[in-house]
Image (cartoon, rainbow, N blue to C red):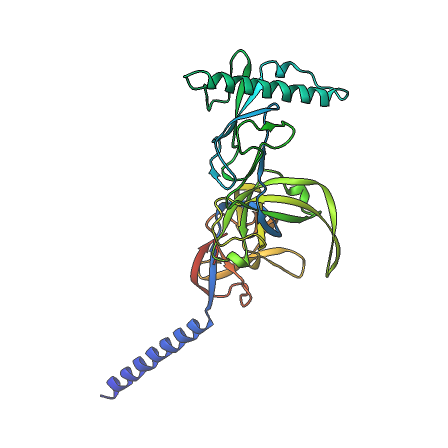
Length: 351
């Protein structure tokens, strides 16, 4: 009986010891977030701010001075790119005139006179004939006395102004025959710091965000970059900036002229780059960069060499391999510490 009691007591003590030691070990384990190293595509970016503004309209010019034969639209009309605006009639000999600084006014008068005479001759002939006069929406055609061109809208939008409202109006090729305003078209006028402008080129993709339209992210392109810099005075002093224009693709009603926009310009793509978050890379007292790899259940200090810096972190050039588990933000971790990953994410993945 005594022997049985002793065995039971020793068993109870052993179980208690195991439970207590297990709890102690569990309490010494450090919970961490792990990052799996992968090769990914990284982007170099430049971020700048600017103002949303209405996109500039487009002026439409006649190829030569002449007389409006037929007008298809009026101010305020919506048009599509390529839609006819007006037919313009020229004297057949008008294209043979030569322009010079000494006779430009005479030549312009002669062109106007001949074009208008051709128009009058055609309308008088038309009124004495039972057949209707010829018309066309093609770009150009001609007969023995005149040549006709159709002026078309270069962009879709709204007719802001038109040089002729009735047939017979003289159209000067040096002045817009019509102005088409982009309907709902907006762009962002950027102020780019001189230290960043060398990285920008026309055609680069952009992402447009803003407090005034915080639920939307618009895409677009760098359309143009000014050839001159200018000085801006701000609360922090004077700075040198260069203006650039970024387009906004398919803008919604929430992005309005006058809003402040933040534009991220994607300046380059880099393929097969291993990147770790900035928080995962540390530096020891000797200036060596290192990370903590998870091997088994323990943290192992591993020296690494970093390269370029991206929005998502450091490029890791050597020291670790694909699929290695790295401790993110290892503030409470030391060499050989027992760790438990509570979550694992891929490097570059947003939290």
